[in-house]
Length: 97
Image (cartoon, rainbow, N blue to C red; front, side):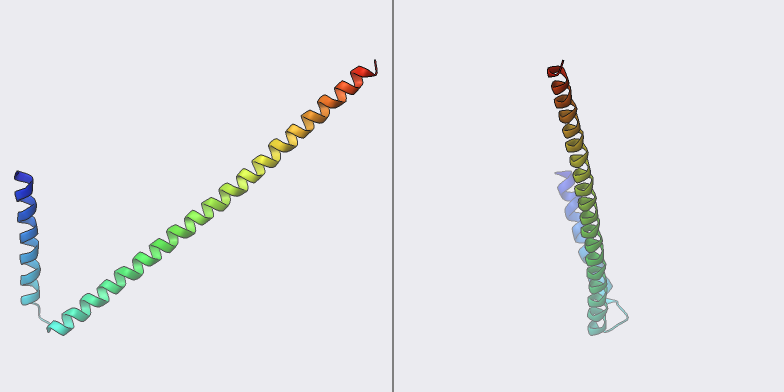
């Protein structure tokens, strides 16, 4: 119950502050709206840039992981073939005795 009252009080205070800020703003309403729009666009651009950086980072890490996985697969496959060949050669050597 106390936390609900606190949250409600904070919301009312924030709304009142925003309303008073707009009412006592030195600029005309159209100028204030333009500034708010520009600020919103700036934030949107920044968010797009951060998102694109995140996507690029994920792509880079994914490609790196795929390269490492491919190298690991090639190493393991090569080692398995080598051991199979070595085992096969031992088997042939034992039959020649």
